[in-house]
Image (cartoon, rainbow, N blue to C red; front, side, top):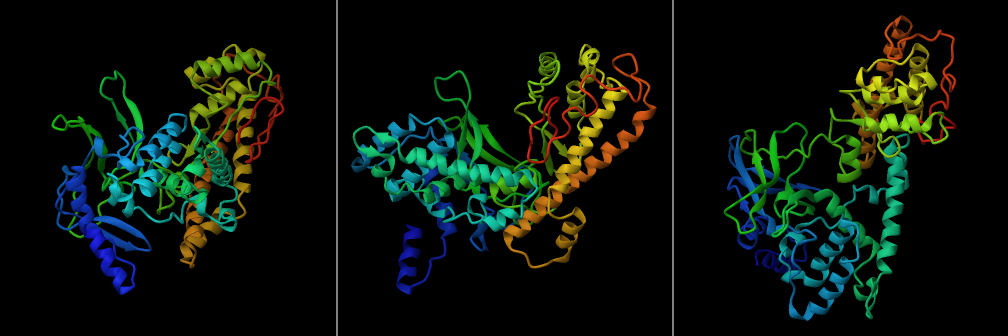
Length: 483
């Protein structure tokens, strides 16, 4: 009612109505039983952004928000709609039952609430509060913007992602609904634009919750949209607690809660912490980059091809220690620029016939297998990291100078610049760690294999067999990849 009044008055004045955040907060409490601390206020930040602020001081360990599980919009939420929409609701349920991707099901559910149920939707006011567009999502970047990410794995992933979204939409729109026609014929509002909007809504606003449905013996993980909850912005390092908590006083037994574990001053924006997310992931999933980020990381792959010598023995040794080299990359970070697990994996992959027999010691003892093996491993690592750095069109020094210059950059240029700087700093730290270890190799005396191969000797695969893959992930001819 509050929003309808403002909308009508603005229409008479010929202006865009300001969103009624006070009315929205009152609606959350009255319609959805959301508990909101009295000191919290929603304020506009400009350019379509908003945040949650403290109107008065908030002490540490203060509960701030509680959204009952039954007030969360998930794929499991009951579909409630007026009688005249029953047939369309049944058609939608038929589609949802055939989908295997939760994002697709939740996207269709959000769009159905938006375009079909409208004001009668349980989440109507919240859906009205959602952004009309997500211009900073990678789905919305231009080609020239994406080119700013050249050299980063995120550039490659963005291309694959954008292509996959279009293919997924095409597959969905052709789904046949009984005798009513295709999905897009039954629901004309289902367009690629609205599909992308719904996906961006899920990626930027939903969180995962684990809930045990009535009558079930196991928890189920759902992506959930939480009214009021999803208005909090992210800040690295702030001490907040959020997640699904048991609430015996509620009929559903649980609520999505936020508790302040630090004090907030009057007038301050109150943030939550999404967790240790790298700049790459913040850009990829949430559509922003933030400032200095201690959690920046770079993925590096160390795959073992089936053509490698002693493949079965090496693959088995890696599996025994939980290494899935074909599907899981290793993460380089400022905190751990040279993961021991990556080094041990490469030691096994580059092992010769004799070294394979003691390959487990690479993980158990963390010892090199031999001097020759160690040289090969670290030369491969050196080549890989140098190759990744050379894949960027600019140097770390150039990017840091540009970042410090305060030059007027577009939002996307700045996001890409921060991402590149963070990744290059990680790679530079890795390079430094690799070079330090390489210098120590000639003096090594303790080896897992219990013997020493002559410095000019070669492993069974030969020094550097297979070499190091390019940053784009070129296939290796023998021992595997490290890219």
